[in-house]
Length: 270
Image (cartoon, rainbow, N blue to C red; front, side, top):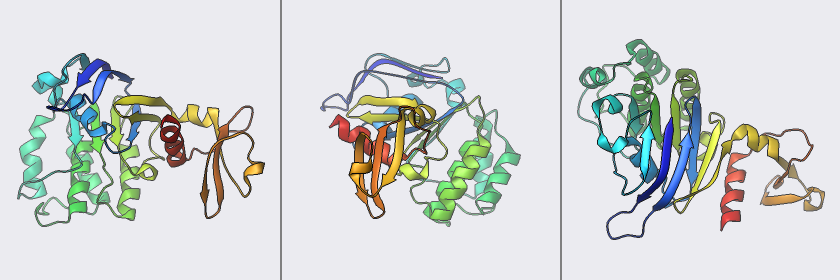
């Protein structure tokens, strides 16, 4: 699990991004971390993975303090950043060099995911496209079987078929012993795979709940006329009508429009 208690963090000579910030996430969940630019998403991921140290408070990830960067902690955390560079090696050579660092690494799982992504171990990382390199990093991270998997904008650089494959592979690869934390601006790319939503705004958590509860508490519908929308809390005009959010009350559950819900939360906050 990930337990963050009252942390403070500021970049040098800047206003603190996090002050007295707390958040708890449990294993066995795929969490979507959403927020506008500057909300603190990437910084939070780096704090959780130990790439940045807190300046107050504490973070506990499966019994470890990330900022200590202990080998036993690093062996059970996989982090794919939005921006990355890879060495001029073949996939096979890269795997041979890094696989020993992850005691739960599954070579057969890697080969299966590489096949799904139409990659081969003989492929040279410096000669394949950015999207293919991103798919390889995803395949490698999933094959590490780390208890904590952190993905920052994982679908950036992927074409539409690859995004669909990413969702399929992710859902089929993770277990109840893992926690997956996905930060993204592309809400529609992950709305079918996450089970928990965390929304950040200016270093604060403005929402943290399961999609199941969102579906229970809110009703999502499309109407031609706003007057027919019963007690709408929020709406957006689109080509096919008004997309609305209302309190569920005793209505049947509806499918969650996560992008609409995010816009509702951040507009309500502002």
